[in-house]
Image (cartoon, rainbow over the protein chains, first blue to last red):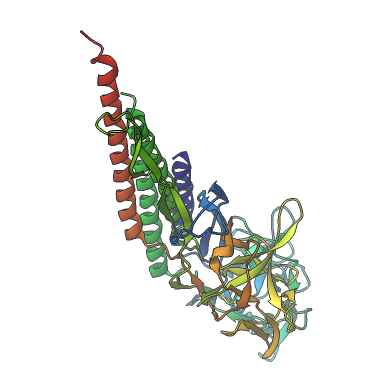
Length: 271
Length: 262
């Protein structure tokens, strides 16, 4: 009896986590570069309740009667599918087509990765620095911050598909500035640690960042200037998941009620 | 008199066990690859009932008048291995099995002992070293071509595709083959937990006919409506047994408290 109570409680907790994940996806449906997440579950351990069991015709069965003890949240996995491209009027808005990530330098000095390419040019003592809207500098393919002389006109900066910055020379032809936006890939992007502001951090599970310019065998991503990558949250999917999660939660609460009533009846035996 | 008291008690106990099994199904109604479980009830072996001290019978000895069964116990807990529905995820390494068979997983427990486990949960990823693993990091096993189990190592920098036979290809070249195992008799499979099954002595493997569908996951095959109906029947059966027990108690109470009064 107490088994069924706790099994049902584990089911309610798991579904609560599921709803949390779905709600976070829905909250981030308009977040640039957001990747949708799914909660997954695994059954808990099994317990033997009777060692000798027989089949319908009376023959002994090779396994004992086992009962499972509920469910647990096994993982919350990000799905790194491509999001939709949204037109942006900013010249420093970039969308990655492929599996690469932009690198930015965090306030703590370590490198973070993001799919959010909504950058700005920040005025500093050295010139204009390409940075995120939070002011974190974006890194180039060699791991350095991207800085332009303050004399340049930001509207004339163009970026080619491989991420190289071009600026019109004296004749008005686009000439490479020799700076390329860094894009990095991971063996297991699901292993990246999510931090705030759409930033990801490298972990042992994700593997080290592989630089797309130096790792020759990687399938290179394409940078699209003037576009932002929308979130890949599918609202209809999330709503269906929400229905499933809510109903599963409800059913588990019914199981708790039923177990409770059964205990009550057992309790009434001794009037 | 007291015999019936214990019969009703075994009835309540059995309904509790059925409730435990049912609750586990409900708790796992959203677990990938979960197979619904059920419990059958079996009566205790019947006992001969003998008449004693009946003066109406000419020789004053006992006579067998029939049999009675003094209660109920679990017959078996079975698993319904029928196909679950598919849900689309679009991830290459999410794989659903259609048909009979299990993925083979190399599971290492906390004391470092490695054993083969079997699962229908095909939500896999490629880890940092390039191996195909479950979400818990257990290695998914492949077939090296000569029937031996081998870990599946992929080149994470390349796109992979998985066909229905479980062959994993990168750059149009086959790099690995998933090991799908099936068994002659599922009665020799035991639940381990963690969505895994393990074999017991006597299990015989056979060639699996399952097809692999990459980009899908197999949802649990728990039928919510039938579980709720079962829940009603279990709680009511429990209640009926409780009423019987109570009736015995009331009868005993009369015997103890009222018969002795003058």
